[in-house]
Length: 129
Image (cartoon, rainbow, N blue to C red; front, side, top):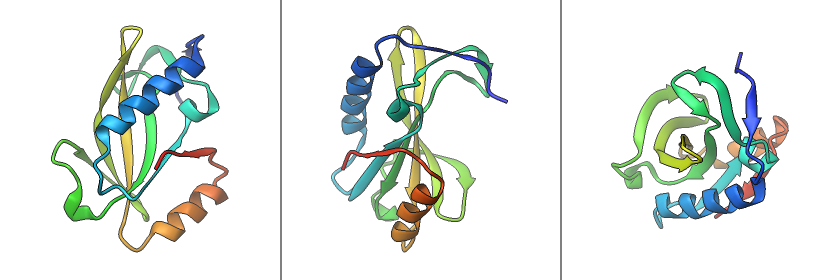
């Protein structure tokens, strides 16, 4: 279970910073990108204790890109699900805590399924591209 989290008081400002950071990490070949998770829910913060090597919320971004265009800077985390592969897209520092950008790279041919799955799971998403 995740530890308790202390939310940052300036959620809107952090949201804007994260959107700017995301734009620096996305290559032109990304056809669609959806931000989800604690950033979108305005529940972004730091954990009271380390959790799986993280000290704060991660940034969840669902991206659609042809596999041959995935940047070398995106690190494959060797986590594969039915409709996506998980990559790390770097980190952003907020109030002394590094927050990882987790990229859920949708598998080719699974784009419509991915959008439906996010809806079925009740994910709140924000289309960023």
